[in-house]
Image: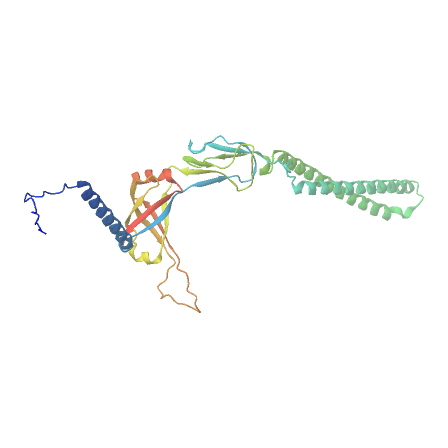
Length: 328
């Protein structure tokens, strides 16, 4: 049996290169870029606390609360939120309660009336005694004229002296009564002109200065208690500040007059100046008693606008949250 070797026919031509796909390289680049960004962000989050502190605060604009000094139903309240007021502009009228609105009677009037009545009674008694004395003297004079009793001279003189004394007392009482009646007339005239108690008049409330109405807390026809807020006013030059609370370990990085960065509620950036630092921290090491560790109190920091334009930016965000950041 014959075996044949088959001839292997192989080409010696170059095989060539596969086509390159650029999409794979772009995807790979994007992948590594995203990974690098994520790692950088994590490192930034971890390290940033060593670079600066960050906390949220609140914008506060100083306001004046307007309330009623006597209380009552609100008869008129012709103001609206955002309205501009000038000094002495009428804000509200509070209707009087009208309880016990009779004029307060002077106690002296009652006393004078009593004294006059008492003196008149005394004068009537003295008049009756004088009449009795006059009748007795008339009888004595008649008996003396008829010489019926020659020993009556001494009795007649004594009766006359008693009568004269009684007349003098009555004359004095008459003068006292005249003076007291005149005094009573004067007091009664003053009483008519006397003012009623405060609660008997409508209370008119006016703006104490140029201001803007920040809020209206009541409505007409509602009842307002004494001292209860009716509206709040914001003075045109009212101070505005940011109040923020920070940890005690940040205290060593804070100094009055330093500047910090802000992010306002609308996302805009701004700057503020540290106006005051209020802290209850004391320079003593942290101590622990029976597994109890005292809690650290926060630091209260007041920030003021860096300039007039900053104040203008802050005003619309009263009582809103703002982000505060400062470098250590």
